[in-house]
Length: 135
Image (cartoon, rainbow, N blue to C red; front, side, top):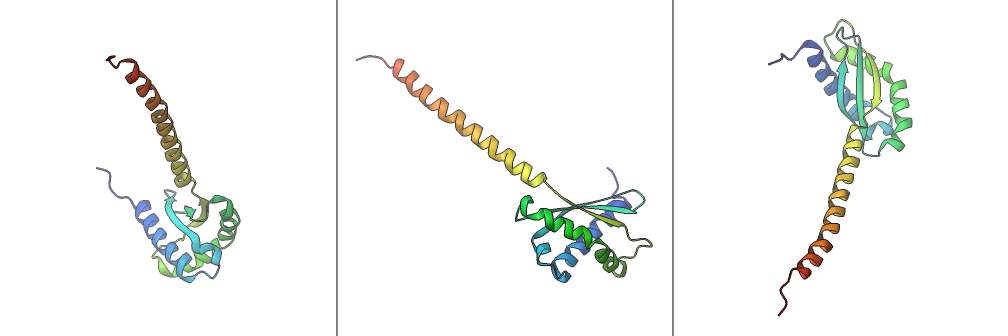
């Protein structure tokens, strides 16, 4: 079993602290709809890629992601007093499309299954009528 290494522990701590900062201490209302889905750290802990998703969807979040990237230095400054790290990583915020892609795939699968069932039902009914014994 693989150990939970330092970069994973720091990433989890960053995720908790950034979530708290974004939701409780940020004054920008555009950030309120964001949820941090993951944080990936480089091995040397110098950079962190923060994956965000929004209940508003990607179309309305593009401007907010740009704004949150502009506020990255503010978040880095706030993290400095909260984390016991020598160097606070550079923050790079990225919109996480995986949830929307998964939702689209689920919808496509459900539609395909429904289409297959709709096609199979008339075939089964006509086959049942052909195979019925005549009185």
